[in-house]
Length: 159
Image (tube, rainbow, N blue to C red; front, side, top):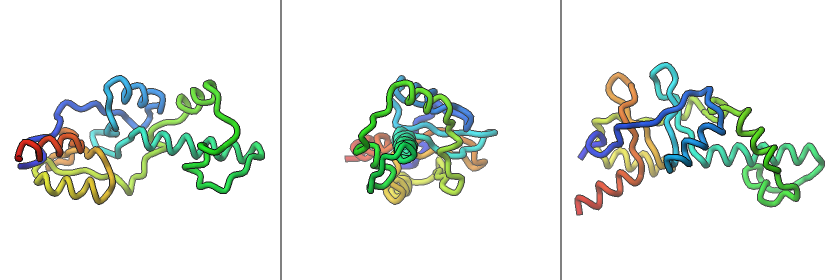
């Protein structure tokens, strides 16, 4: 069985200029784990809730350090131990002014071709610890997405 047989074909996408607020709204509204980021027809990455949380935690930790609050925890986890909780205005400001492009790492664009076997997709997802892979055709154009749920459903149908 191949990726093209089990992928989701109707895909929501965002561009790098979209705010994190808008991305979160889309993720929550449609119960997505992540969403492909496309620029000029090319997949330039995937943005997911974990990336947004990581960015927000890093931002809070840095702001709290500037305010004189010090922690010995790594930045991604510092916000769980910080004494000052961010208020709603600060969260809204952060989400509205930050864009998807600030989270993307061009060297980490991970895609899979629609003609690849499911086993290859599974291996790639496990190796890179991702829950979603953009699926591209031979011209590198987005044709769908593959989630771990898609893969598990396919495996369960085989059994």
